[in-house]
Image (cartoon, rainbow, N blue to C red; front, side, top):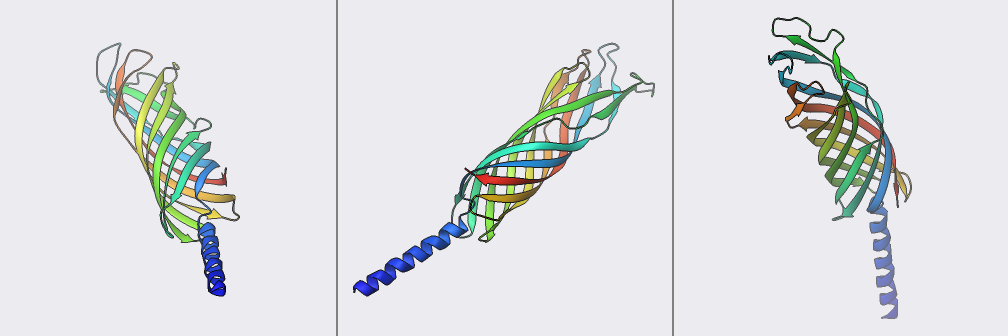
Length: 217
């Protein structure tokens, strides 16, 4: 009987070790990454404060590499399934996309163009995951992002967007991992008043590709 009990205890300890190996991503972790972002704030319903007339607006994308910080907490639901909640913050602004405004007849309103510059974005998300192996986790993300922008008059705008993404984490020891993600933003329309008093609607959209390093606390 004692021998059987010893074998049972040994089996339980072995099973526990297996679960721990599969749970390398479990708990609280932080991450630091670099993202290549391409964002676009689509203008519409632009009305000039000077003339009261509607205007045509063309604009470029805001693109560039930015640093990102993140924190998340992961629960292991079963030997294969996980779920995480987390938050992200961009470390610096992306490059500026030009905005050129013309009258409906095609005459330039501002010869040099105007700009909207992304200053920061803060996001929260939930991410269901699937353990592909003891050291590999694949996941999908559903989140919400708040984007802060400024124009040339340093007037600040706040835009919000839903985000959707896929990613993977690859552990190489019990405390650290590397990760890669692709995220897409589908924003909501918001009404704004510019520094000159003109009114317009913005709708953000875009994508980002992220690679980074993560660590368990």
